[in-house]
Length: 157
Image 1: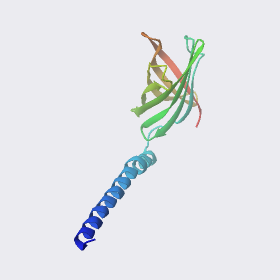
Image 2: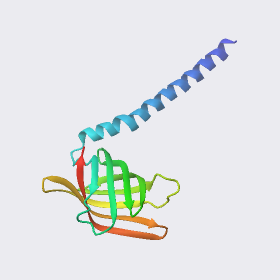
Image 3: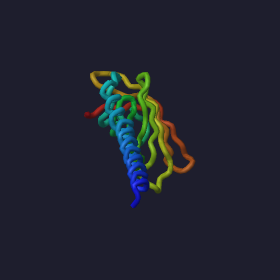
Image 4: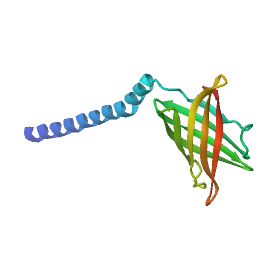
């Protein structure tokens, strides 16, 4: 192999390796370090943990539980909804801003297509954190039901 060709191959492969290292480091910083750092410097309320809907206050035949994970203002987690005789599981993504928790939940099952939404105010009442507000859920195709004045009580962290 000629020295020029060898130098060219070494230069190209070195550039490719450097590019891959740069992309890997930047993705680690973007997806790993920055969310971790944002979570550490976040000064707002922590809502990660399990939340159960207060069925004593609810007039509706629905049971909802939220399991939330928090990274700064960004929230993710799972929602389990029990309506009458059916049980539905959702993946939740949301955000906290100005003591309001806004989220959308998308079904885990490919056989269920209707999402649900939440807009809840976070406050501290009677010695515990609570989230109060409304949620929308489609129980059947074309039947969107709004549940207002719902209260979720913090269970654990």
